Image (cartoon, rainbow, N blue to C red):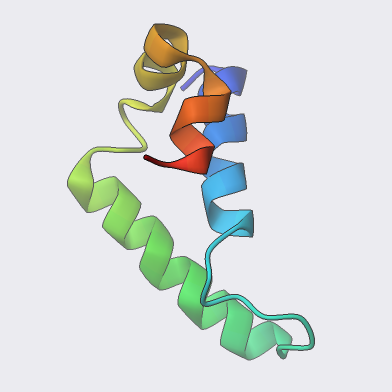
Length: 64
């Protein structure tokens, strides 16, 4: 994965609505691990760089 793809994945994790300010490290880690597994299973991690190169970063993180 290229750095641009990594940025995309990190932003998706950062803006995960399940992550809340003040959460414990253990709680946030559990949520993030689950989200990373979902991203991996869906192929989004593997295709992150291609997605960003095709449409740019902004449309991907802001959604439809």
